[in-house]
Length: 233
Image 1 (cartoon, helix red, strand yellow):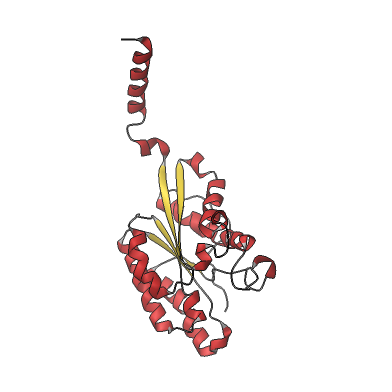
Image 2 (tube, rainbow, N blue to C red; image 1 turned 90 degrees about the vertical axis):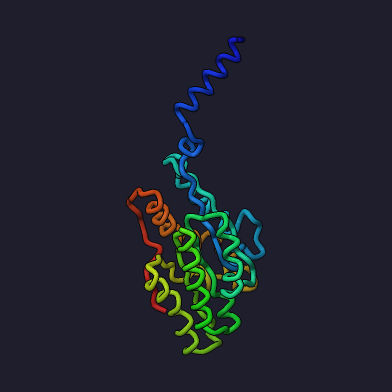
């Protein structure tokens, strides 16, 4: 037997002893599913500037691999999707067994003036489906357009905090917080965030995501800021 072959066998045996399973050395991967509409998908943006891509990069910038953690964020946003559409397609996305789902739907229900009762039913069904799949959930809230009137606005906007409280979910009250109304962070349509606007969304929700990741891996680390403070609407 040649010395090169013997060295190779010895090195392989050492790897088996030191790292019996690939995952044990590489660290546990956290899979985050960003499930939503055009705000998640990255409407009119290059893929690298979408919410999922920017969130994944920001998490990697937190030096998670140095802590033995790997992270993957899947973009499951579909432009134009309503809560009914999301409910119909969620099962397919859950087949990849995400650890954490960021559930961002409802904006198109509001734009179309769809019944908030139906929206609530759809969101609750998705919450239960995610929980049954073993995934944690961050619920992203949305505000209603003003053109449907005050009664509609109140019925619409209370759905998110009420569902979060009922199911014990962390709530990010308004996905477009700090973006809507700021033309520098919006595309020309005045509705969708540009790349900088998406970055602002990631800034806002990042502490909440990190908090959930810490709970997933059992490590409680001091967090700065909060991603789930309630806002006055």
